[in-house]
Amino acid sequence: MLGFFEDRKDTPRLSTLRQLPLLATLSRRELRIVDGLLHERRHVKGEVIFDEGDEGHSVYVVISGRVLICRQGEPETGRITVIDTGVVFGELALLDDAVRAAQARAEEDCVLAALSRGDFEKLFETHTQIASKIALQLARQLGRQLREHPTSAEPRPL
Amino acid sequence: MKPTDASYSIENRFVSTGPLVWVATILCTTLLLAVLRHALWLVVPFLLAIILYYLLLPLVHRLTVAGVPSEISAAIVAGTFFLAGAVALVLLLPWVAQQAVVNEEALYRYLEGGRALLDRTLISLESQFGFLKRMDLHTTIGEKVAEFGGTYLREHLTEAALEAAAWLPSLLLAPFIAFFFLRDGKRFLKFVGEAVPNAYFERTLYMVDRVDSTARAYFMGLLKLTLLDTVCLAIGLATIGLHGALALALLAAVLAWAPIVGSAIGCLVVVLVAATDFPADPWIVYEAIGLFLLVRLLDDFVFMPLTVGRSLHMHPLATVLLIFIGGELAGVPGLVLVLPLAGLIMAVTGTIGGILNSPRLRARHEFAKALRTQRITADLQS
Image (cartoon, rainbow over all chains, first blue to last red):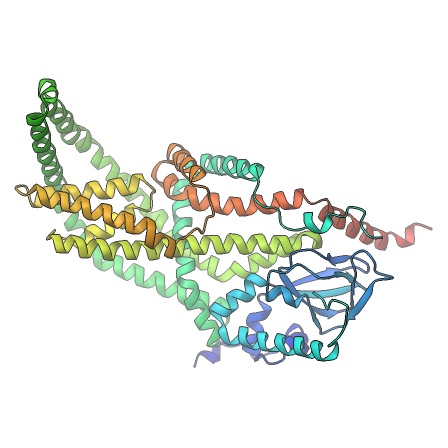
């Protein structure tokens, strides 16, 4: 009923967010609410995003660029995987208090959107539907990773 | 390439609050209170605005979910609250003015009732203990109380009433400030996040989240606690047969916002009313005192853990110390403010302490700075 107040234009930023699998099921209205919680971070190539052993308090989505996941301090010899644009990493920070399982570095200049665990938990109180949709997408992503690497000895980040 | 300090992963984790953080928290709280006591007219509306913010935020969220942009939601909710408050004030003002005259007479009547109760109790004690009779305790104390009630209180009552009236305009600031909290709160958090270097970003987010959670848990818990206290006291006082049980209970519950002193004043008010309403029946007074103590116990052991809980995570010794400092530096507002203020400062000092204690984080920041410098000076180095 109050939808007439709503700005129906999709900004370039919202269009970018809509492409992310984690947020793909959100409506424009819900996306706008989540956008208000995301913090944009810009990292230069080689910069450390987080260390193995850090307490994880945010999940990151790669808006542009690529992120390298590697063993601590071994970006050349200890490469685990490379995260491309649109993919989420550090997602376990939303689920538990575990420390980061690997180091994340900017493989190239990149723009990331970070959502803190505190904000995600508040979403469950204030906007349950949005939080449920994100959690479901997160579970799907984790399930996919488990199916793709069922016997991998390498710890999957993060 | 691997950091030589094998303990990096351990020291990279959040440090617990050590003695230095505690000292810094107490010092910062003391300094802030010393500064704030000169601007209490602004601090109190800010405090009310924070409470309003946490009260109204769920309504803003509901409107946002319904499709109203967050800024318009904030304006609608804050505007509606302000209008409702203004209408209530206009409607209640004539009644309040009328009650002020009646209440002044009632105040002296209750003081007189309290004095009579004290007199009777002292005479009863004197009849049992000879040394008290030789001291002529009831005459000495009776004179002091009469002096306080007769001259000091009459002289200072008008002054206190005028001072309270002078505060009213500043209290009108509260909904105005709450509106900006509601409208720009998220924007401010983003602004803080943007100002922080990447290396310290997650810890800063964590700190902001802790500050917000602490403030919300404390203030919302305080409101719930006030409601529970009011209901329990009102039922008890009505059962005893005191007039105006609900108003008395609400007054006592609000007074309890000031730790220790507030509860004592609340109890005194209830005792004065009981002694005046039932001058011939001292048991009513004892029952009122018993009820008050019972509710205090319920408060400390049941309601408090359920509402405010350990939202501030403070050691009892530090709590008592801070209460004394707050009272000494800023009076009653200091008593109310000191604990939440210290809780928020502790979240900030703990995070800053964690960053200062983490050479790895500082090294990461320096490394990122070097990468950026290298990038922007690449064409200047050949």
